[in-house]
Length: 273
Image (cartoon, rainbow, N blue to C red; front, side):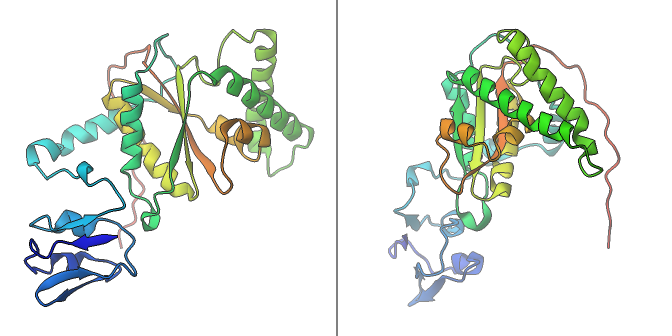
């Protein structure tokens, strides 16, 4: 429940103006939150000039007062940071500290979600990586063989991937400890899980930025997400709850490569109206 400390409240109305579900009103010169249409977005907590609003549903000790020195990010530096990021497929044989993994997940936790439903959760795979790798390659092999046995105009574009998946599984059977073209010998995989896909994807983007800021590298594996979709063995291994889907698979580790510059991209396609 969202509450207002009437002794602190000065009745300025800023919370009323910024409340999208219109759940706050001024009564007797003080703000009152009705907690009827409120979806706990926290805008009233953030906008109040005298810190009079709180909630008993979340940890208020997480609230940080705005400080320009600590919060401001230079736009040019941020743009260069985004341009410089690379998908990493070469990792050092080095563990990633739990503290860094927690910070990456924290970046996801504070990412916006539709209707503030906060439906995103995380599965961190470290000790079970080899078992998950085996199940994933088996699934990809099965999907690949099925595609190759029934090539149609609709799935022609996936034929190259089908051949790749079958080949990856063959190499794995020949030498399970050999080349890892799935997880690339990274020490940790973070699966981002959500009820609504866009929420997980948004969280993943911020998580990758945080990983990069910690000196780590990341790769989003679409192969794993494809293998896990509808695969009950993998879902059981991950203890996935009903209604939850894996939105992204984030492979994380210490980069074993050093890039020197950014790369070019296609011009942005923009329609101004």
